[in-house]
Length: 109
Length: 112
Image (cartoon, rainbow over all chains, first blue to last red; front, top):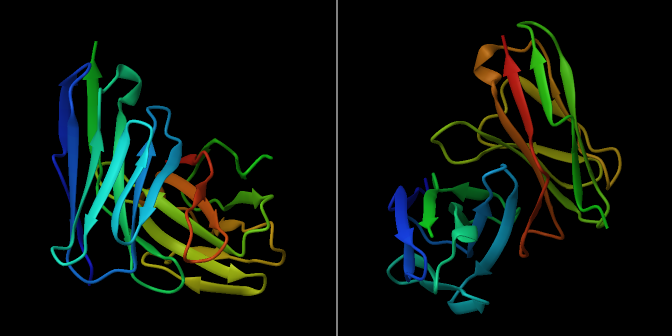
């Protein structure tokens, strides 16, 4: 059974800091998703990746298939980045995801 | 383009009552999912559907039922509500299993 572990569970940063959130999974997967859950509860899909690196604005996601590990980086963090960041692995063809418990990020001005 | 619409946003049920959580998407996505999110836990898959007329159980299906009579709609039915079903429920859709997802805004359900 695939398990998804995230670290850290909670992260507090000062505005402008470079942030890294880590995600490890236990079995081979076809893709890994990074999601953002706003304080109001809504969930937004940030990235889906199966190899290498993707970048969108100040967000960068990387994945190492051999090490079963992915990272989400935020450059020049801002208070509006405060949210819960969730990684989820996809193994089957139906697109079912296994979710990590999330990393709660708080960026202080 | 509304995306994925869930109703209601909040609901309080008494033990033993029944209700239907509605989910509608206007993106012509074939794949639809229902997840529940409990405090401190990752989202868990309740049921999913890969197209109209096709549904299948996820990780935590007990106490729930679904139907998929149209591409757009994927309602989740709770029969005989129990306190263990107190949770936040999210509906999501995707074009197929190989693309990203669009999530609804969630339904916060409390069973008392």
